[in-house]
Image (cartoon, rainbow, N blue to C red; front, side, top):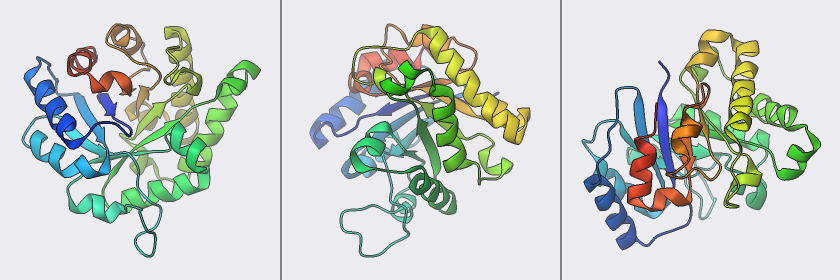
Length: 253
């Protein structure tokens, strides 16, 4: 059974004191994780060690960096390498978030290099893909997302992609209050799984966890996660409220 994952993406929010308080409150809020379920906390770089220490020993709970650089080391002031993240025990790295693609011009080729370096250092990518509003309105979202996947991931082996994590982000639904309908979410998730099935076979495709990332909230998570090809969510704003994120965790299949 593929993993069902509730992943929090704090983005550029919270002071250290606020981050500590949020984690403490969440740990004190009732939530349950089954054997096939995980909670992942994508926190800003300065808080990774602190949050990891707070979560140490907790079952099926992991920490993610929100990005890493595509080079091993060198004169890249301000960047953070995969080796640095490995050295502090980070588990996951969010790659290719729509904000990174839009604001920092991250290309599919750059993301392919980032995926490679994560594998080299034993980090698990949460690879984001998704279409902007203009592409959705033109009806070409399937081919757009397929190109993102092919150009960044199709150089990988079947072994590397077994158990991989994808996050589908309808960009038009991020921070807008809009949410793709359950049918729209399921359609794209099924399409993504089909893209991998065609290239790598059903066994690999069925092992990939595909998360929905577009205004997931406590009051809609259960319905979204209930779709057959939706394996959880990459959660932004709602992950900053302990009771809301606990409800989202409890909404996993």
